[in-house]
Image 1 (tube, rainbow, N blue to C red):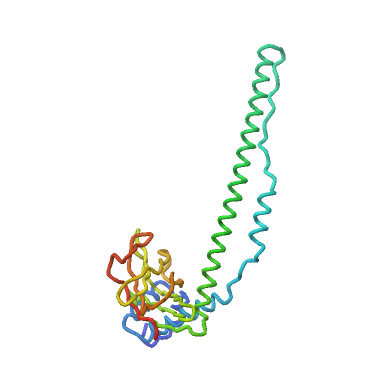
Image 2 (cartoon, rainbow, N blue to C red; image 1 turned 60 degrees about the horizontal axis):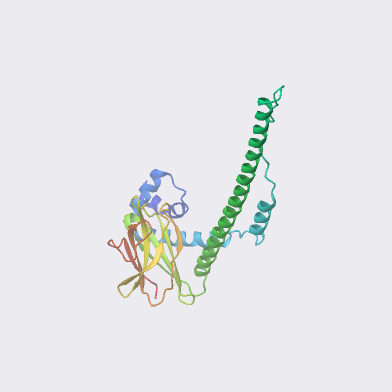
Length: 253
């Protein structure tokens, strides 16, 4: 593929629409073409903004409706096959009484078990609702930074041809980081973001180790930070960087 043709693939690359061999060739081109790297980063940032702009917020009453349905849904009891009594009395009747007592105990145990399942289902639904609510809040906060009137953007090259864009809103005291084409971290590792406070690194949250592209709201306030850094850390993150930075970026003035 000619260089002229490669220059036309920035949009397709930003939208992950290239075949594997085309993507590999284009990423090699990115390493030597700052203009394309800049354009890809800007297109990725724009794509993220557009995606967030059309995101659908679940109805406010959805969680309550699901919880009400779970709490009132009737649980079907187990089917117990009745055992016929013996033709004579004595041992046959005793066996029949024992079976009746066993069936009753089984029904009671099943009822307790199904009650526990209902409680578990209710708890699972509540926790899922809380996770969805927290995710929605993060998405709204991220969208607010990206769409802030005072938002400023800075883009730079990262490791292995990846690009990164940081969006800073001083009015909101927040920053967002948008990555494109990041290589996956080694097993058991994660990318950790840091605010750069005049050379002192302050934790700003973790990136999703399974995603090579995406956007994340940096944790904490921007404060007096003049830039940010990215390091590879053990899963769960570290209080302070334990590796050399994968990238250092200055915040836009």
